[in-house]
Image (cartoon, rainbow, N blue to C red; front, top):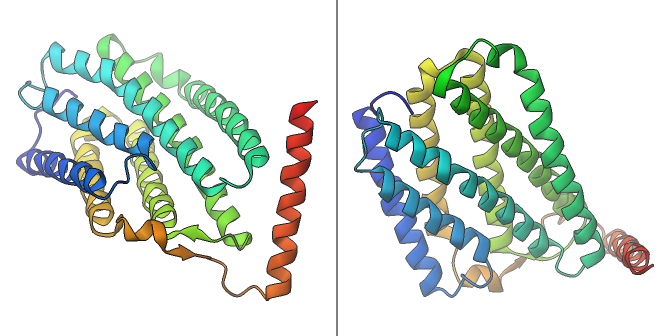
Length: 260
């Protein structure tokens, strides 16, 4: 947030804004807003944040304040996206979905605390607004790490249990998992080396965002909601049925427990 963006970063920044707007219009046109409401609001919030930041000098306090105010909103919406995706995968299994949501919120809190504790020595040597920025980076790393783990759990669940899911849900889970994994690694490297590589990390993250947006624009379509895919195709029919019955039993037990 302290150095002037490079020409490449500015180009990528504008490109991500245009691509996000295209994806928003595509989702509205294809009637996907109701199914992916959290994702849609997240995209709109990113557009607002980017448009508000474009005319500002990154070296000014106004630019920094804008980041400090708007970034927590982006974090919250990121969490809502993963919860939304989790609900889409487990639409038929509300008992498991409820337990998973509580587990995720607990994991998020624990991850942020652990991330802050691990950087206490570094934070003691940093002053002024840089301390606040480092706190923000650490919190973001904790949130992203938890979301990556949770998304990997969802992916493992989808692979293990032969549940038919829409092609859009599978695509969304894969792209979002890749994005959060790369974001977390980039933020970890930045916190490890220091703020002097902020511009490089920022450019990499914006380029990654552009790549993900292109994939969503090309493949997140209305037809994808009608096409169901079972990821684990190699299961024998009887083995697949046994796993589904097992999942039904777990879900029923959790629902009974929640009603007591």
